[in-house]
Image (tube, rainbow, N blue to C red):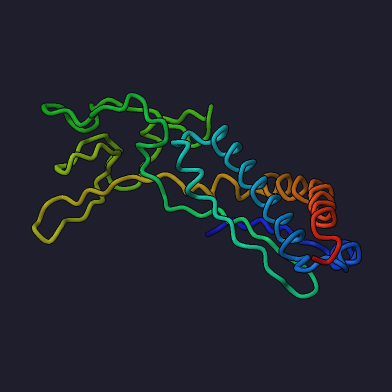
Amino acid sequence: MTVSVEITIEPQELDAAMERLKDVPYAFQRAVYPAVAEVMQEVRNHLAEYISSDVPLPPKAALKAIRLYAPRMQGDGVVGEVVVQSRMFPLIDYDVQPKEITARKGLHPRQWPDFTFSLRRGDLRAGRSRVQGVSLPFIARMPAGHLGVYYRTGRKTKKGNVQIKESYGPTVQYHVATPEVEGAISEQAHSNFPAILARYVDQALANHGGGE
C-alpha cells in the first residue's frame, strides 16, 4: 500500500496563468512547473514533520519514505504527486524499552521480562500484547549481531530447529493513511498554491516578459 497526495492545477487556473504568460517563452518551464514543484516540496516537509512528531521512528526513516514525482500534464491540467511508501520496520525500532535481551537462560520463556513499544508517540503498549506465533515475543540478538524482537512460529526449519521470526511494526504510510492527515495536507497545498503560482508568474514576466 502507498499513500499518494496529488497537487492539481485546475484548467481555469492554468488558463489564467497562461494568459498572463502569453508573451513569455517556455512559460510552463519558467512558472508553472516550478510552482507545482515548490508546493510538492512543502507537502514533503509537512509530511516529514508530521511523521517525526507522531511516529517513534528514526527521523531519516520519514524522509526516505517520501518521494516526489516531477510535475506532468494530465488532461487539461498539471499534476504533481507526493508518494509515501516504505517497507515494514522491525518492531525493535518502535521505541522498544528497555532495548536489551529478554531471552534469559535458566528461565522458562514465560518468565522472561516483558518490554514496551509505541506505534505512535504516547501510545505505550506491552510487548506481550503482540502475540504473532505460538510464543510470547522476546528480545534477542541473532548470530549476525542484530538485536530484535522475535517470536516462535510453531514450525520447524529444514534442519529440524524451532523456527523463529522477527516481529515487525507497520510501514510509514500506515501512519499517514487517514482521511484527516491526507485531507489536511491536500487542503494546505491547494490553499498555498495560488500565491506561489502568482509569484512565479510575476518572476517570469519580470525576467522574460519581453519575449527574449
